[in-house]
View 1: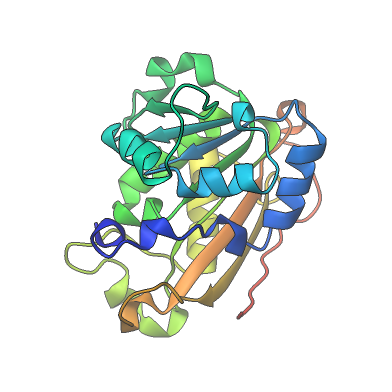
View 2: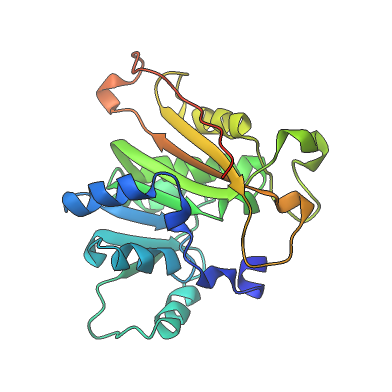
Length: 236
């Protein structure tokens, strides 16, 4: 992956998200709310959360490649005898993820995933998002970011050779609703495009980052009107 090859994983980007400040404040004020980072890689974003005040024992990192966990501990000079950070190997595009990780069902009020989902094709992305829904508690928040697709590039660039599928704001909203089996007003979706400013060579097909958040329905309210499903488009 280019983020490993070009060392961009070493820069925390979780705090670039439009919802970061409010989510962090909520999590710090209420210690009962747990957070999982799905596709955490070496744990850079997790350590940013801890630096900003989230108790490490309230966080779990998931990734397919468990060797990243040891690399992260070495990279960040972490004391293995005293660390409270927790990591677990998991395949987020495995359709059997819910049965293999039944103990994580509805466990986390906050579910984060960044710079991962764009690696996969459309079918795998739907599985990935359904597995995020498995993790989130009713009424909780799923939020993240990935390479986005500007409307003016056209359908020919939805999936470049060797790359996963990319979406406009509205296309990703439709994927989210389809994965959740939600109606138009059941989940609150917010999203924005921001300029792609990673530390790497510029590329015309990596001009935008799609940032998004989904407030999932409280179970008892599913199928009822819950207010507006909003789409916010901004340029930063």
